Image (tube, rainbow, N blue to C red; front, side):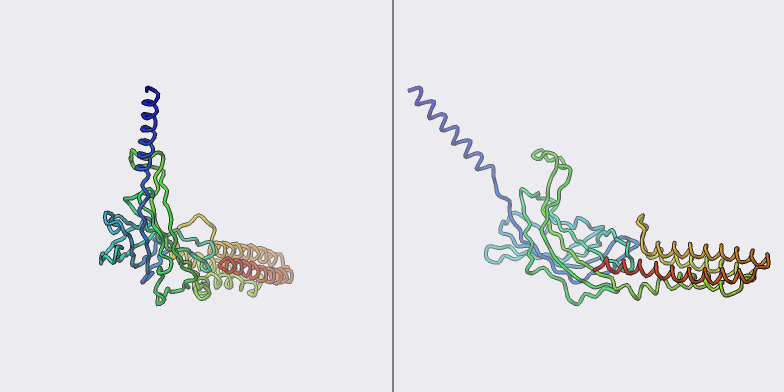
Length: 321
């Protein structure tokens, strides 16, 4: 009798534990989320940001959740929602609102102005973690307005995909250990800059500075006015560098504008050294040798300068393909 009692007790305990475990495992709610971008603008290199206007919609069945109140743009400097609306269609809740967001962007300017950029807008739930809620991307309906026009840019690709954002903190939640994970969706644009016209607009000044310094080789080795031309070319190059840098954020990477400006300064200094050498030859009454030095240095300078610039520009253009 005792054995039968203990057997019934054991089976009852096992069933209770199994029932409790079944009760604890609650599948997360799912929300189908999509976006439609009406505009992308104010691509600000200096402020490291861009601005976008877009609609977000949510399809879900659990009436107790409200993604309109829990969602945020996690990589935005600032954002605001408006025109909120919720409709019940059958057993599905259809919620929508419009968002304006100024989004943070670390621009990769290594190949500026022949650069390619990725713009990401990260939509994330700020209340429900991944064990409570899952976002499913509405890829079929998520698009952008084809009338969007960006100065100097071409939109090459657009996509949306769901994500899970992991944080190395539990935010004090006693049910979690080590880290926490929240559902989200990321919308991405791939942009290519049409940089040919901008390139000549930005660098015409530095190339004029180089040509001014190159002209000293035709002034004669005995002409002291060559020094004034070199100084003028140097100031023109520095002025152009400041203009270009004012359009770009501070960065530690060596960009194409940095390479071109630094190379031009090196060549201007080289022209100054040759000018000093030619003038010294004139003092020693070796004018013919001075002319010979000028001609050889002119050819070496212009051929190598054009070749290096062509290689760097070609390499930058290839990186955008």
